[in-house]
Amino acid sequence: MIPKNKKIVLFDGICNLCNNSVQFIIKHDKKDAFRFASLQSEIGKNLLIERGLDPQELDSIILIEPGIAYYKKSTAALEIARSLDGAYPLLKHFLVLPEKLRDIIYDLIARNRYKWFGKRDSCMIPDPELNSKFLN
Image (cartoon, rainbow, N blue to C red; front, top):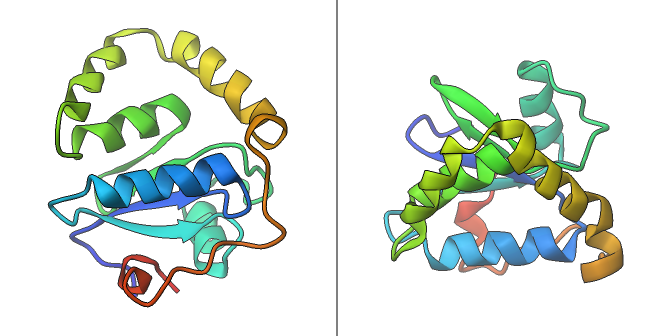
């Protein structure tokens, strides 16, 4: 079941940087705006296919706002920041930069994320306290 009133973050479940980013989002999501699924999960693959995206491409975070839009790469990260508490919504001002320029930096990090941050053998299993934030 896909919640209609929550934003869905699809992330690379074996990437340490991506998993740490999910933990960061959860910590700063005081409005409980987000739900999560790994790109490797069946629900993640189905959500990608529904949007005409290739489930084999696991190098981008995807933000889905059900019934509104979806965002990839740097745009997804900046749109996520808009909904966090603290000063993070100020990052939205980077949206004025051309997407191609922002995505050059994003792609550099994405290409090197396993080398720089490592990866897991399998997707993260959330603890029972956080399980409700993950789509199964």
